[in-house]
Structures are given as C-alpha cells and as structure tokens.
Image (cartoon, rainbow, N blue to C red; front, side, top):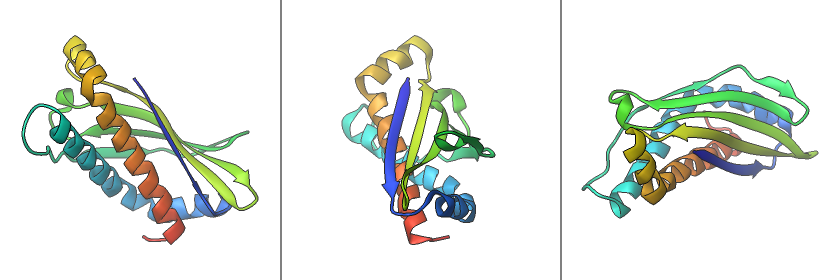
Length: 150
C-alpha cells in the first residue's frame, strides 16, 4: 500500500540538510509519537478499546543526491510482535521549492500485517492509521527543522 505526505519549510535545502543531521537522533522518538497517534485513531474508529503504544525502530540511511534534491532511505517497523504491525519502507525526499523554501516528502509503501485478512482491514481502516502516522511524522519533522530544536 502506498503512503505519501509532504510539507514545506521556509529554509534553503542546504540548511534543512544541516538541521536534519542535528535532529537525527530525535527522529526515532518522533516516529514513536506519530505511531501512537495513529494507533489512537485506530482505537477511536476501529475494533478494540484503548490505544496500543508500540515502540518503533526507525532507520534513516545516508542520503543520495538526485536531480530533485536529496533522498534518504527510511524504514520503520514495530519492535516486538512485528508480524502484527505494518512495516514501512520509504524515501525522505528534500527538494528545492525556491531559493529559501524546501519541500519535505515522505513517500513509501507498507505491507499490512496478517496476510489477506490484513489487506481487508487495511482497506476498511488501517490505511487511515498509516496515512495519519506518516502525516504526523512528516509535519513534526518540518516543525522541528524550522524551530531548530534538538
């Protein structure tokens, strides 16, 4: 299943690249927060009671330079009970929008857990959780880059 979200920041690409290196250690905790918010959405609209607080493993690779800008390979997966949670493989794409603006895009795919049953659940509900998680993480990354927070 495909997921994509983009955000823009009022910073040049070179500054965004520098700041990503500064906040890199915080990106995993941002993924945990984003995942929890997605799970809270699932709990509100889906079966089961209460939110599942799941820790995720976030891996961001070395960026490659492309015509469109910088592309960081990204993957994240749940820690423990991996077969019950989706695994995301994506690209974090940083590109020029203007002299002092940068577009941040998380563009990827995930596999719903639980085989054919998971695919049915994904169509009904889980894709909204995945979209919410990606949107939250991308927006938090943009906010932290603008704030320059470590």
